Amino acid sequence: MIDTWLLSAGILGLLALGMLLRAARTPSPDDRSVAAVVAVALASMAALTLSIAWNAIIVTDLFIFLDICCLGIAIWQAKTRGAGAA
Amino acid sequence: MAGKNKGGRCRMSSFSADVVIWFLLAAGIVFAGVGIMGLLIFPDTRSRMFTAFRATAISLGAVCLAVLMYGYTLFTESGDSVYLGLIFRTLFLAFILFAGMGAMYGIIRERTGRGIAEGRGRVQEEDLKNGEEAN
Image (cartoon, rainbow over all chains, first blue to last red; front, top):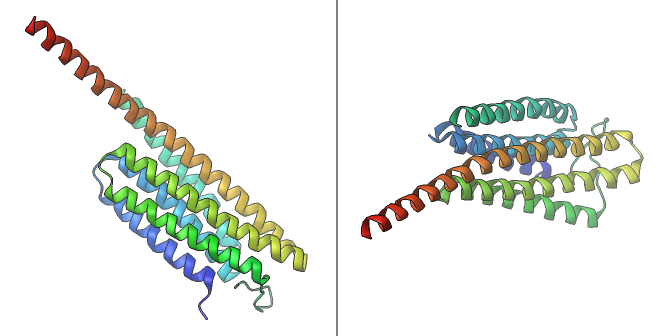
């Protein structure tokens, strides 16, 4: 029987990958920021479900740390870009 | 519902909890797909951002609720502190993601709103100029 948590993690991971590709290819900086933040959120959800499927809670800990770093960088970049534009 | 304890044995939550967890996970996946579709099909940054952030926030809420339900059910059944840790980590992760998404939402909404206001200002100036020329 297919593990529900693993299946969810796989689908969410694929969606996060698609969003990451969108973030890499889009020309608009605002769209890139939106896509990057959504990709981080989807990847975190995938990691959360994966940590249950694998019974490895360290995956969640790792992604909490990565989330803080990635979101911090994304917000800092969006703010500095906004200040530059103004 | 899958999930293994330290010995590698599968732990099952109750059937009713399983049904709710399946439903929440399915809702989370569907709304994540809606968020991506919104980012792909809408014409301007503002509407893309609204759809992507709101659908992803609903998806995040559904998946976190599923994990919380799983952790709470197994914690009440087994009393194992691992599940309590899972609940706290999930709450912390959800807080970080919601705060980050909210901050980014505010920044981009302010910037796109400023662009729209500047565009409206330019249109009004052009209308006034055209009106004066006509008079």
